Image 1 (spheres, one colour):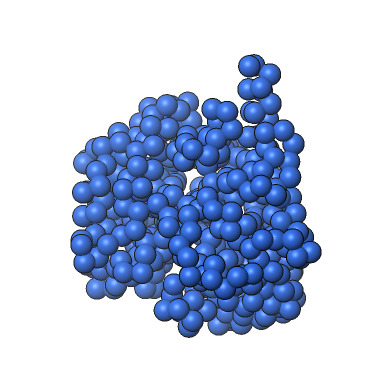
Image 2 (cartoon, rainbow, N blue to C red):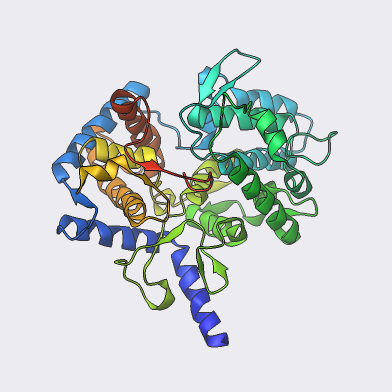
Length: 407
């Protein structure tokens, strides 16, 4: 039993690396290129079309090519409002460490709430009158919920997120904060609350990292003046693994956003598992700026992969870099565990790696100036959204029934 557990632990550790993500995603891409995929065909001419779309989108959005990171902080800027400056004002009396903790608290809770909202949901910002939907709406709504103290256990100290506050959160309170009504439904509301409850439990258990209050911002003290992006991701995956879906497991180890695909090679109990870790990598991308604002230097950004979500994946279907083998696949409702969805997301990651140098070439910029974090923001995500708006009123090309913890 001990030997099996040790081997399972090694398998899980490997599946929590971007090396495993890339190796397995690349293997599935080459398999699809050979015509061996049950679900997809690959057209590299379509990848050139995708690069054209992304380069054009990047020039439209950033004519000076001053591209920020792909990050939750971009959604906090929705409507042209500098909400970080407003938050900085509220934190002006705090020490630099407490300010950094608050920014990280906000980042973590907001990213975990950033799953597909559905086509119907909207958030109206009282201060500006702006109406926001989808990721921007979720970002603005979570920002206001944070500043209102929804995630804090102490009304006298609202600008924080802590274990007790998260565990006390109810669906009714989150629904009120996010303006959810029968006429304004939010997909996966209960799943989001359950995810935050699990986060609260994890924070409470790891007081050595998150402090006696159990604040996500405790991560700021886990690293020195310099840190590698992959080390940050590793910490996120290791410390927060228990918040993810329990049914994806090797032995007693939860795998999170890692799904079974019969064709995926691997050693031992890692065989047949395709790691994706979309929300954990999105969180890592989104923590880059708070760490930098705290005076830390982050290197190795391109060790992270692209994000396996429906805007990036939609870009490749809508430019025909990927084609469904059977058009009827596009009419069905899928689950995140379905092999088609697992493979679509894996192919998205592999194709993003192939797309990035094509985009840089078109823009006349190098990888140091435009790491993948900026290609995504420039970018692939926005081009995917624009094509979806043109073709399907914003809906993704495939319908996935998510519970709010994957997309």
